[in-house]
Length: 270
Image (tube, rainbow, N blue to C red):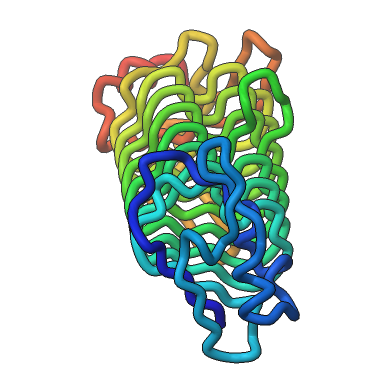
């Protein structure tokens, strides 16, 4: 196992794409320490910014102890192994990852799991904007994998999502599931506006309160339970809405009936 400890909290962004089990594999402690990182516009070595310890021959397991909010691109493209961050972490965590596991015992900044193709990301605190989403202008969203956030999530999560699962145990901001075509999102508490805007497939489950339903969604029925994953169902009852009809979409919103009495007006259309 490799243990990294930052010497201090940086004032400037640090690009550390090298912090990756695929990159560390079969390298010595010295070779890992000499890997390149960027702080601002200056090139440095990993050992200049982190204390590097190697506790075993297994270099596909990485533990980071400390606040690395300014450190970006950790786990970029990883295919195997595990990264544990005991603290907050910066942007682009696990971008394009296709395997392995990342656990953050803190908060994660924006674009965590962007363009994810597999693997698991667990964030024990809050996640920023664009969780599992691409940059603006790109249409390559989350294709596989799973993201679990124990806290709250910002805006524009799961944009262009194609497959995979996102579980949000707290509240979620606006524009969740924008233009999604597949996959499952479960928001266990409250959701913001424009939920599922322009979606054409997939499903979004809200077990808490939804600020409003877009007018381009039509109520379809009531449903008692909804499958999230194999062996795991969300208990309702739920209002089921179909849309986004402005895009000829067949996506589904499952919204808690108990937590959303204001939606009872839709029952006359059933």
